[in-house]
Image (cartoon, rainbow, N blue to C red; front, side, top):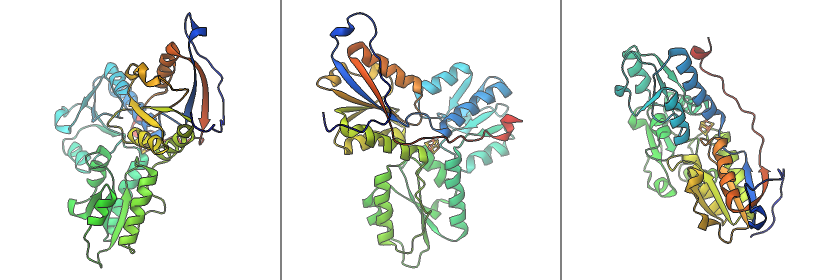
Length: 334
Ligand code: SF4
């Protein structure tokens, strides 16, 4: 194990289930806070639940409402039907758009078909959409920092004409940009990027194009920043970090990277059953966190699974307090 950590908050525990507890080797479990659900995910799930109450079953959801199989399966059991595109939704059925946001063409098509739709786009993603509109109104070409193919990136790039925005993912992409000196430029970023990588990319953009303008702070959201900060609290003192999240969850994958950059092995798992007990061999201190789309229930499931093998001493390390709550769309509260 590495150097000892500041423990801000300690939940003594816990642990062990069943007989033979005394014989289990001990394990210090450092749990990151904040972790798991963010305000945008909470809101998106509640939107689907309220839509089911208001309109009855089935309610269609375009794209996974959030990137978590447990959440999606739970909503399916309540009557939600998940599809990838709007043309899979019957015209007379209500449809919810996911938290990641959608290109402008999607609500436009729903309106053309006179469909009932509810937009669960996270307000922090909508904020980036509005920034994009404003930058285009000012005649700027937008350099968008994000991961190609991610639904949020597709949604944000779909707010403007394709020739008005250029996607960059890496420093190499920045080096390849070829704008004329007089081109008015601005930048925006995906909300769930690595804080550190994005700072480097923005610095490279400003270096190459000193006249480029952008938001005061990058658009990485509070939840992404806080979860990365909390991994930096647990990882240096851990022998291994487990991150609960889906492989297609951008913010969860970033948490694995942040832990690895602290010099600690990290593994992305979706459920407790994904843990190979061999991973814990030689591990005296284990870090645990969860991406913004993973519910707390899955964290407890992992703690319980580990307690089957080890006597767990559980500590929570708090990097930030979160109190953010987003309002529901008025059409579901009236
Ligand atoms: Fe919104 Fe951030 Fe949560 Fe994405 S991770 S839903 S941007 S709060």
